[in-house]
Length: 378
Image 1 (cartoon, rainbow, N blue to C red):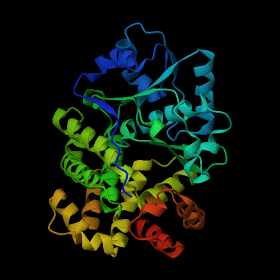
Image 2 (spheres, rainbow, N blue to C red):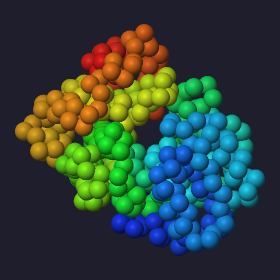
Image 3 (cartoon, rainbow, N blue to C red):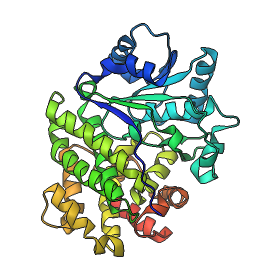
């Protein structure tokens, strides 16, 4: 059975941050905890959000690390409870939004966060008691502002997914103005994250025609604007389309992702210093080649349809086109350039095989398949 569900209210326009107070009122949040990170504060973006709250009482947690951790979620949840907050506003990239989703669980549910991880059978334990969340993305990558999931590194160092429709933000305030001037490398890495979402979900074999259409359109927008946005941080049209691609990728990936994310989640847990979007960009070529042999991908001409959206001649051109794009964007040439060692392959494969995205790849990957993908991505 196909389950298709779109629920988030989205405010999408330049200057949409001005709607933050009215959206808090609509949702019923009277004392939010604002979850962000030090970089967003330093860039002045946090202050724009606080100004938009218009005097609404609030608390702030700005300790979100680049990859959110269970320890950070605990620290923020303590502030939430101590300040008697009744809702959350996440201001930042996917890390801040995912951290806030962790707080939404931990501040309202008993037991350690790991109990609610998807691979631990925790999704049904997440109830409608979760704290209401408004998400304000400041990058164009994860699309967590419209997604039901969060990725958190738990105390035993595994990078786990937490998934529930109760975690979908009540409102996504998508204001491309907040991404103007984002540094080129971060623009490139988060943009390739969005492109990976669109491509992986389109290749997934699950039946969800709306997701397929959203993903293809998002891929076209992301692919045709990522270079412009990276080259010129003030290009408003490019920033708008890249933010839309990010949002669309996450709207679509309720259909499922695949081996790119299985590997990225696992390697990100092994070395939390590595950027998730950059890892996705490194793994995409090898995974596209692997998926080209999938009967469902071949039957529905999935690669050729993606190639058309990317302005390429055929699906066989995609892996090289991604490598060329990575180079033009200034991303690393491969995993070796990021400091990844072959000695860690088996540990990465262990995590990939256990990851929630492993099962939704259109072609089942074995340990040897993952080993070959890692080698090809070096």
